[in-house]
Image (cartoon, rainbow, N blue to C red; front, side):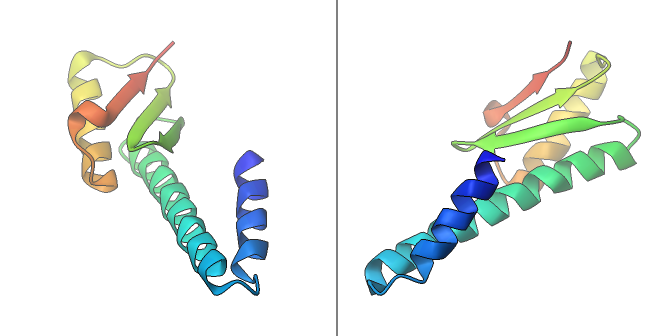
Length: 99
């Protein structure tokens, strides 16, 4: 919900009469859209790999992956590696959150 509000606000700003402000808003909006696409892609790939439902949150170049149920250490390594490949982030920027 918060991201939608941010995107709506940025969309309005991108139509601003101030060219510099509009350009900056467009860049941030594009970044948010790409971030959301990466989150959805990781969630879909993990589901397709048989890991069930997960929720991914990408913020400040760190991806947090919330899964249920808990996974083995081997599966955790596979999940983190796949997410790192998709998001183009180093493994140290990945967090697997399990119940």
